[in-house]
Length: 408
Image (cartoon, rainbow, N blue to C red; front, side, top):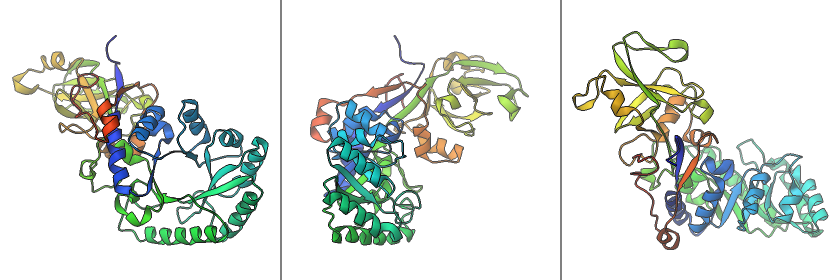
């Protein structure tokens, strides 16, 4: 069989490179690779294994169910999950040796699960240093710490970590990060004074790992960066030494010549102003491409075209122009473009589009675009070579001749 009609090509050597690069920046702090949300859309299990091969010390997920999937895949590395509800299977987490984040209300549930499993739970207490999501407030922190230490004295759990999350680390000039770090230091001191023997203190995300060495403490938690994407609006992945790991590609499904005045897609918001050739791209919002991202780039035969008209559930349209390159007539353009690889985004090594251009078209961030690529789009993998696994040096693809013969 040939290549899939549409696919997200995941460059595992690029992920290896990114983990190794970021781990070196964070040293001597330990490195947690965050693989939640199916590895930010890249595939949780392959990403986790690649990150560990590249030297990651821990893996992080949002949900216990994600962490249990990693254990079911035979991954025994230190593992933490931190976003829970009263329905969370704390018992399974304790049984599988999964560290649990605890903001307060979960403490009694975790202790009950540990009692039932007859095995102490490992918890990381979370302090809300200013983000305003989960985590204990500073007003409630002393009581939470005291309750946790009481359970620890009873042999039901061990307080092995204190953690928090930064709100504006992707804007390094903002003073709120300094305030959050000071609050974090105070919370850590309170926990240690109460008797917590902490193994890891962690607050740094990808942007803080890159820009705030004073936030590294004992461990950094890196998500976006391991997938080769920049958290900063004024620095590209390449400038940070990272390689984007996902290439989203399909094939041009149809080409046709149309007259001036031809409306395109629902609402007819785009109307051709001259005779032209339209190309049909068989990806849409059911595949995770944002419906609002009209103008997003699609690269065909070395030329990047903007999407015209509204993006539909399964498809979108590009305007190939009234004439082709090198003197081709409009009538000849369909023959040259039909079936050609159509790249929405990739690693940019040949000047092709990056995912940030789709984020700009959709008025969102690169995180959202990659994580929302749906399961209808098959993931195919560029595998690690033995040299990359053993050397700490990536064999990451330069984007040429992968999958559909596409250069991304």
